[in-house]
Length: 135
Ligand SMILES: [Zn+2]
Image (cartoon, rainbow, N blue to C red; front, side):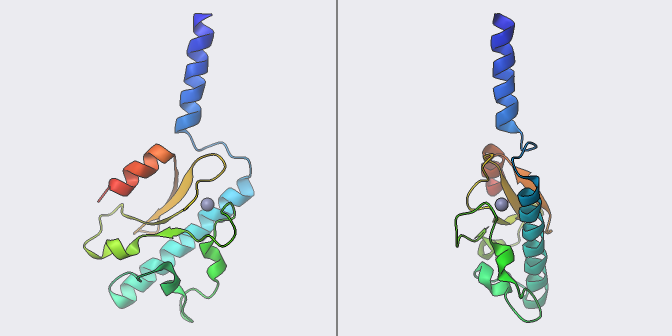
């Protein structure tokens, strides 16, 4: 009986710390790819204007993002855009600084985040909180 309990505790631990399982891989990929594009547009904006826009909508320009639907996670409630904190990235952001992320976690409890180098990764809630603290 003891080993069964140990196994169930281990299973719960794996579930809480892993974002590899997903109910809908196509939507997960869509979110990942969209947030990657958002990251690229933010980097283009930063390069052109030497700073990040004050809000995510700032990337909407004829020579940048012309399809703002990419700012909406397929899992998010209607109308909710990716959360944005690029305005805080002005004062010398670190290499891993998270500029945008899923405002609402996915059904599996994990979120996609994109950093100032346009790198997207999926993180657990604990990893997410830690990532936001990173400078
Ligand atoms: Zn998402």
